[in-house]
Amino acid sequence: MQLLQELIKIHSPSFKEENMSKFIQKKLKEMQIPHRIDEFNQIYNIITDTPLLSAHQDQVQKHAVEDIKIENSRIYGFNSKNKQEGLGADDKCGIWIILKLLEKYGKNKFSFIFSCGEESGGLLSKSIDLMNVDKCLYAIILDRKGSSDIIGKDNDYCITEFQNDISVLGRQFGYKPTTGIWSDADTISSYLSCVNLSVGYYNAHSKQEYIKWFALQNALNFTEKIINENNFKYEAPTISLYSNSKYDEGYEYGIHVYEYGEKLETAILWEDKKSYEYIEGMKDGYDDAKKSNEKTYEEGYEYGYEIFQNGEDIEEALEWEESTESTEFTDGMQNGFSDAESMAKNYLKAC
Ligand SMILES: [Zn+2]
Image 1 (tube, protein in one colour):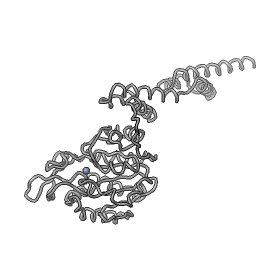
Image 2 (cartoon, rainbow, N blue to C red; image 1 turned 90 degrees about the vertical axis):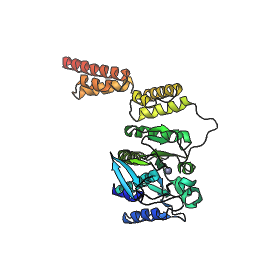
Image 3 (cartoon, rainbow, N blue to C red; image 1 turned 180 degrees about the horizontal axis):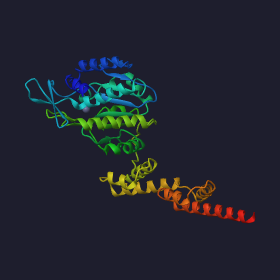
Image 4 (cartoon, rainbow, N blue to C red; image 1 turned 135 degrees about the vertical axis):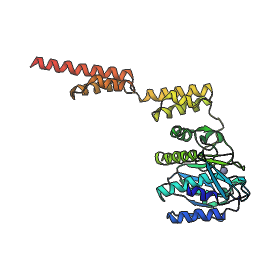
């Protein structure tokens, strides 16, 4: 928690981010992470074909935090007069996650941006060098309040496929898609698909701001899972003239649920706020994906035949396959096995 406390104690209002920028630069130097700095104190490193992580250095609070108190795993800040003061956890939580991941994975695993002036409209688009971000695979903006939000498709930050893939990975961390307010994702999404994720702070932009330590760690783990398991390229979203009906979105999501081996019933429970059409789409997408992946009678037959030849137990194999495969496949297995068995018997008789 020491790094987080150090970040909280650096006061970095918009356009006065020098101290924060210097602190991050020092950390990067210690870890031997190459980086560039632009005229606005923004720090970045863009590596082709890697995920991009982004957080902003500035905060809205006018006063510095001098003292930090931790109660029930919640972190609170206090000013020099011992009055409660906002932590600037928006977005020091995001900075913390990126530094932690750099510490663990070193310089080549992902690209990063520590932006400035985000709370005052953003400076990213003013810095020409940053236009290279479209060489990255996708972007994760770490700048959302709470503990469970994925801001993506509904804010036009990403293509549907990206939101679906992130949502499936996020389920075990309790994350799901919703809509949100302005962030650096509004700028970066012109170049590639991105999502903005919750990073564990609450009551942002106020003196009552606090961090839930476990929510922040959960956000770190989720981000780590994404960069480890997803290395696909997702283009920037095109704002369609013929926006998809909710059924189509549900349908596409249903396909992803099947492909990731998730249970449809559980996925539907998570989508409790979605429309009837969306849920119907999910079911159809799931069923169609399942059908197109189902093994045939012939494949089952061959498999059953092999089971006999290898001297294995057909009942055991059937029990195993029945839970996941179609009845055509298991019927094939049974028939393949008994044909092989009777052929062997006839052969014995003939001898
Ligand atoms: Zn923010």
